[in-house]
Length: 379
Figure 1 (spheres, rainbow, N blue to C red):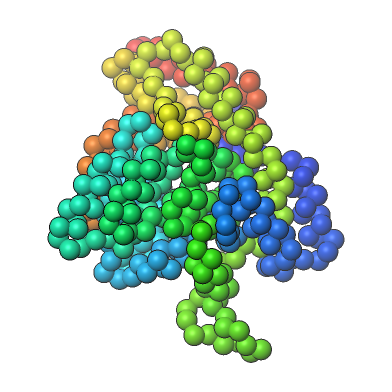
Figure 2: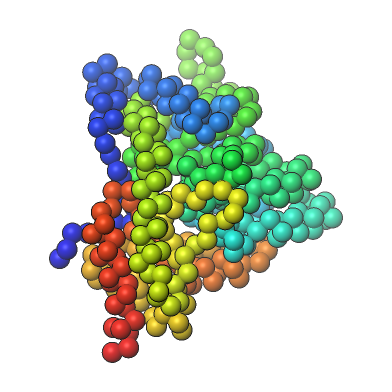
């Protein structure tokens, strides 16, 4: 069996080791320490956010952001349907109901027109949502200007789930920094990683300060343990923040490597009928965190699942595009606007191995297997 090719594996270097060694040498192994503070400062500078808070996961960051925007039981939150469940779970943690908004085809992200229609309809009914959560998929920003305009028109705060989009741009700006709050993920498969971890950013200093309190078990200022509200154990550790500081320094290298992966696939598969890569929207840089494409079975000669299985048979990891949240059994009872675009992308979409540490031979192996699939299917 050939060595396994993963979808998106961690890519470590010597910088990370140096920062971690410093944490050990200084004995800052306790949850908090100087690397946490430094990572927050450096990250905020990197993305251009006024305030940043390092947390245990992107999910924790989203949970705190929604809570501090007042989401509570009985509320509704409009949210992208084409995403991972971690975007929607915090809405349910807070007892609120998600309302799913379909994608548009230019970026595969939330359709601004559908969002505007839904907000207008809810305003007429006197039932505006408490918040909107837009997801920036696979390394590409949603079309934020019309989304922000629609939210501003009705006074609804926007939260940006930029877990997959660190390093991308939107009209020269950084996705995750344009709404009331933005969240990022440093999970092991992301473009940079701290093993596990996340970041909350916001222009609202009070929101970030309150999130800091809640993330450390909501301890009130006192020499003893005093608590006036419920808190969480959501802070990032000093050791993991040390890894993040090293990773942040090579972010542009990691983006360049993933974009090269995409360019390799695009060139090598250019003549194969029925394959269409996720577009790069005209408004900014797509990091190609994951190289994704859709497969037209009639033209290609096999469907998405046949390609995925063929790759797995050769010890190559590939995954379907996210299954829309409105199709998930746990969320099936909730409202949606549209859904057909996201359903089609899921039905035909595949994510190819995209790690920044892939070699040309790895990429060639993936292409070779893919090109052979239609011939096998016709046997």
